[in-house]
Image (tube, rainbow, N blue to C red; front, side):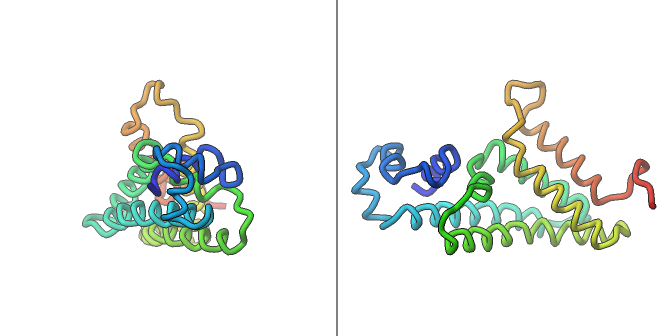
Length: 187
């Protein structure tokens, strides 16, 4: 139920989505959905919390797996790309939309920080191992996270790269932001 709600919210935005529309996608009557969720805000929050729990568990598993930090970060970026494009394409839009309720907005920001902390902590480890100043590491991390959040806006599934190939390619490029490479020069 929450996953379908997330899809509708991602497609239409928060303000243009109604419980009746979500109920219709679920082959329910609008009044039936009110039995489970007394308001649109409650359903939206449940959808975001459910999505965050699924994605955070997946990313935490990658981040906590064995191996060098840079390899784990690369797998983390690839996994996030697959979340965005294949496994949960409604995930990022839930965090990018305008929410009129400040309490709801604050809770979504809190969930976003929980998700970002996994990436940020592992990226900081990689940046420190590679001698990247902390400020540069933070900027690189935010660039990577922003790039991942917008993948579905430009990726063409009918293009030359499969989702998996693109995820690997994107992960390779994003890791380069946090590791030394020949093209980076010091001021």
